Length: 116
Length: 161
Image 1 (tube, rainbow over the protein chains, first blue to last red):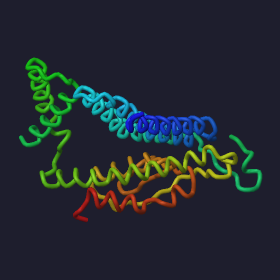
Image 2: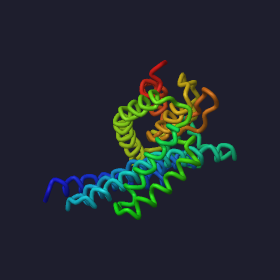
Image 3: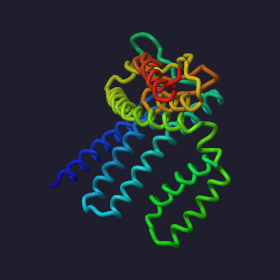
Image 4: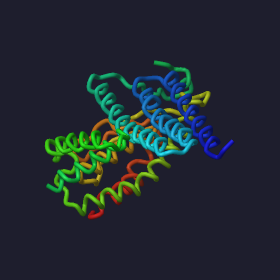
């Protein structure tokens, strides 16, 4: 058990946790817009954590080739960070232009039970 | 000419990292491709900036990234808490807020909008001139805007303001 494999496990497990939270959010949240929150965001951090975990795992047998592969993995993470918010933004604006109605919270005690 | 050279260097670095081949054939192929790309689209990557503001912007951006990542982790934990909470419907309150920004350069507006979208709980819906429309999932998520994030983006990318 080297330090790198412990790091790999920590990164992978926390990445899985955020993917799980994102998926549960996708299923539980009430409307289109709030589901985009769960889908677009928890995923970006989770994906980066998983990719970092893979890069760490890949570096266990250290060589120049492995370093190159890890660099490529981090490039994927960088591009996910740029493209994911752009896509989320484009989908949200398209939905607003088309007039998809956002879920509004109804004030009062029975608020917890109302679903759209 | 300078923009062409900078684009070529960026493209070729990218080529070398992605190809991983260091023999003469692949490097020559890379040089030819990158020269073509640099010739046709040198005005896309580095447009209209003088070298100094380019370097300063890059440095500012690099110092801004760790803080952004820290914010993303915190905000993700908050969203995970909200989503996994048994009485989630009492915690969320989706609404749109509008505010005016004092950022001037397009690049800093884009950075700010992308940062808002990256931190969970808030999505930038649109930017019209100075006005941002942000869709927030909870009240606490929208309370923090524009606030510190705008100040940090301004410090990183608009030092002359």
